[in-house]
Each structure stands twice: as C-alpha cells, then as structure tokens.
Amino acid sequence: MTIRTILAAISGGVASEGAIETACGLAQRFGAHVEGLHVKVDPADVLPLLGTGIGVPMYGDLLRMAEEQAAESAGRAKSAFAAAIARHSLPQRARPTAPSGGVAGDASAAWREELGFASAVVARRARFFDLVVLGRSGRVTDTPYSDAIEQTILEAGRPVLIAPLRVGPPPCDTVVVAWNDSASAARAVASAMPFLRRAQEVHVVSAGKAGARPNEELAEYFAWHGITATSHPVTPVEGVQIGELLIAVARDCGADLFVMGGYGHALWREVLFGGASRHILATARLPLLITH
Image 1 (tube, rainbow, N blue to C red):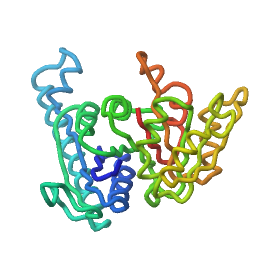
Image 2: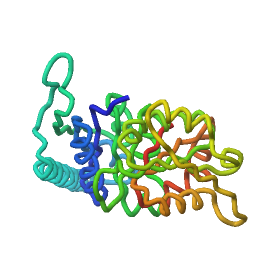
Image 3: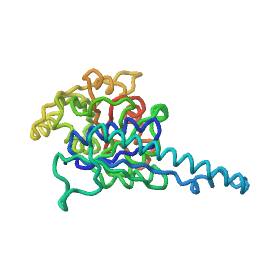
C-alpha cells in the first residue's frame, strides 16, 4: 500500500490545528494529495431536534443564528487550512496531474465543503482516500471518542489517524504496533506499512497470550519487508488496564505513532471502544493509527 491521498476532516474548532498540521506534514512526507474537508451543519436539520414548542419568530431567529455560526466555523476552517498549505508549500490542485494519477512525490492540496452531519459525511468521503486524519479536541479526550471518530473508524474501511492537539514532526520515526494476533491487528499492520517502512525504529508491544514470547511469525513478515522490529511482551498487572501498560511501553520507546486495530463485532459500541482500545483512545496523547 502507498499513501497518495489523505483526507483531513476540519471542524473549525480546537481540534482543527492538529488534523491540519498532521495531514499537511504527511502529504509532504509521502508526496500525497491532501483534501481539507469541512462539513457544515444544516440548521434546517438540527433545529427540529429542539422540539415543537418553538414559535415561528423564535425559530427564524434561531435559524439565522445557526446559519451565522455555521458560516463562521466554515470560514475559520478554510482560513486555517489555507494558512497551513502555504506554510507547507503545497500547491492547490483539484485533479490528478494526468489521467493515470499524480506523479510520486508531487504533493498537493484542495479544499472541499459539504452540507450534512459530520459523522456521516466524513465516513462516506473517507472511502475514497488512502488515509483519514481526524483531530482530537479536549472533549474527545475526556469522552474517549466522538461520533465522527467512531463512525469513521467503523464505516470508512480506511485507516484513521487520530492527530494530537499539539503537533510535532510527521509521525514516522518511531512506530509502536499493538499486536494481539487478531485479524484487526493484522489489518492495522498492513495499513501501517507506509509508516513502518520509513520508520527508524519499530517496536511491537503485546500482552496476554500474544505477549508470552516474541512473535516470530510477525518478525518474519516484517523481515520480508526489510523491517527490523523489537518485541516488548507485557505482563498483565492486577488493577492496571492493559491499555495503560501498552501506552507506557510506547512512551518508554519514544513513540511518535501508535498502531492498533479497532476491535469489535456485533455489539460494536460496547466492544470496539471497550478494554484496551477504549483506554488508549481516551488517554493517549501521541498520534494513533487505527484500522477496523
């Protein structure tokens, strides 16, 4: 897999900076095209949720206020994206340079706005990109996840990178992979290959049965791709969440990217973000690359 297209969902709020800077930095690193997507809330869809006890004059006032707020958010998002692509010297381009696609190393950017609910629009649009970058706000940190994050991870069918609030260099140098010998973990490793090939250090952290010994089969798979990985088996500790132990290892390794699978089956709301996945998404401050 190569990363040639990146979708950056930009709300215009406090989470925007992390998503924008991470996406633009990765576009430069991979020579990719980045699309900044802002989803404007349609007040006509939201106001009916307030109930039927609103009079016509009040409804009109609320509608105008909602439209003004939506326009302000869209303006902030577009301005922030324009400033970022200027800083990163990304030319604006809406189409590939040739019918066969863009030239490798030819990074570019484009802006797009759509109307609707962000969680649904981002998840649908993400299917046409190699990587999706979402921002993390203070609310997301406190609440474990937002609707846009959970729906995109579950429904997009693409790897999702959760950017931190404070952004450093593009996350590629030291990558930590959470491995539990599952199909989700295998998909996460495959999605992370563009990062793993460029990494200076790769670490594999596992717990429980998968962490009983270094995984020789995974090491052999990495070796075929020219990747040398260091294994870190983690012994469960009573009273300490597995996710906390995994993140502690990642911090000790100096990780700038944490790769994990999004686990879930039928009862996805309880399972996908339950256990280790939920704890890591809620507490980790480093970039997370999640594949469901």
